[in-house]
Length: 142
Image 1 (cartoon, rainbow, N blue to C red):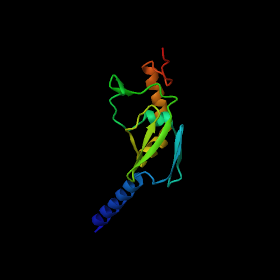
Image 2: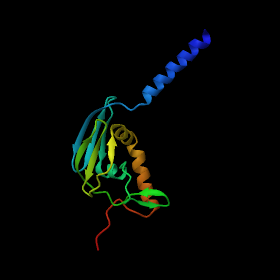
Image 3: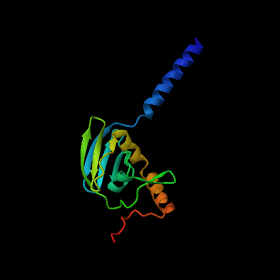
Image 4: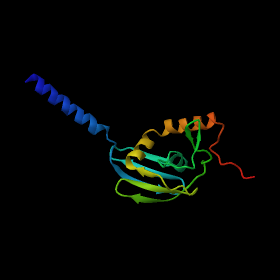
């Protein structure tokens, strides 16, 4: 009896932990072209995600992305802008950037991940650029 009860409690605890591991529900998405997307979630989290950050962390698999030593490196996007966004089903949005990138689908969960980890991700991005002697600024035309 005790064994059945404790396994039932364990199962209940696992279910609660799994449910709490799911990101909160998106409650608001506001496009602020050309500079940012603002997202708000059911837990009260509100994130302002700049265009450069969204472009660099695009979930798209893009053959135009430069890889150096196996690392995905996108540079020169400091001034990239958001032109528009299109809904994709009931789970995400496709953002169209002014550098004509438009293949990434940002899910609501991915927006939450980006917002919750924005500072760490941005710091990693800047370190990666420095490591490869690249810049956030676009290359000057000759």
